[in-house]
Image 1 (tube, one colour):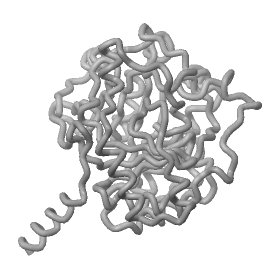
Image 2 (cartoon, rainbow, N blue to C red; image 1 turned 90 degrees about the vertical axis):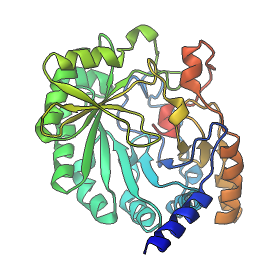
Image 3 (cartoon, rainbow, N blue to C red; image 1 turned 90 degrees about the horizontal axis):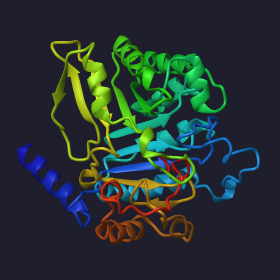
Amino acid sequence: MLLFLLKSRLAWRKMSVEDRYQRPLRDLRISVTDRCNFRCRYCMPAEIFGADYRFLPREEILRFGEIELIARALVGLGVRKLRLTGGEPLVRRDLSILVEKLASIAGVEDIAMTTNASLLGRHAQRLKEAGLHRVTVSLDALDEAIFGQMNGVGARAQRVIEGIDTALECGLGVKVNAVIQKGVNDQEVLALAEFARTRKIPIRYIEFMDTGNTNGWKHEQVVPSYQVLESLREVMALEAVSKPLLGETAERYTLSGGDGFEVGFISSVSKPFCRDCNRLRLSAEGQLYTCLFAASGHDLKTLVREGNGEASLRQFVTQIWSQREDRYSELRSEGMAPIAKKEMSYLGG
């Protein structure tokens, strides 16, 4: 058995590919749609993404079988985690069919989804049965007025909460993400922590980032993670947890002698973590991006629709990843970041 495990580990390492900073490829984020039923200002402001906004036509969006082929190819290069994103992934019809396809791929260790959870209640059980392991839910406020203003369509926080509770009842893992903006929802930090603690689910506080070019990002609206931590420590005894894995983006804390409740901070602005990034992003129309802040991608859809198989896709992606040297957040900190970027709703968060 030991010899078998050693051989398996060696074979797995041979499949791995590293970029110019020796970062291995481990995580593929798959956008299944550029559409969303919310208009959160930090992602899809309504004045830009209005009724006349031209989203991707259906024929340009990758089919489920095409996504499965790409995922299989990249698992052969070391990918172990798959995450479905958008837009809002649950506006894509029959998403459980895709989850089932991805769950059948040998070597995949984790299948997750990022969602606003407004539609999760009706889909959670089917997604769990198809093979989804967990969901990350965007919940920026519990106060209905603040939440309605932030999501841009007046959606109620209670509907998101019901989606979270249904997911928990179905046995899905749940984590909450909250983007904190100064003067917008910073007064919700403690309430969100208590909400997560009550349900025994982890929460991540995310610094407001300059994703895309339309969200009106201003550095003065960023609430640094250390300030959020200070606020929480006024009411909670939190202890730091060491990073367990390369590629872990959050600095994590747990209650001292507590019940396992976990708080995390994603500090892309104040404490960039580019050197640990092991993620690729696949847009809904089949463009591959090596960074959340990338200005351009690499066309996988054409290769797929021309009939190329896994081996050709792996060769193509290996060339891309081996030349990768993205470190946008570090460059931003140094005052050297490029201006042009794709919108987060297009390439997935």
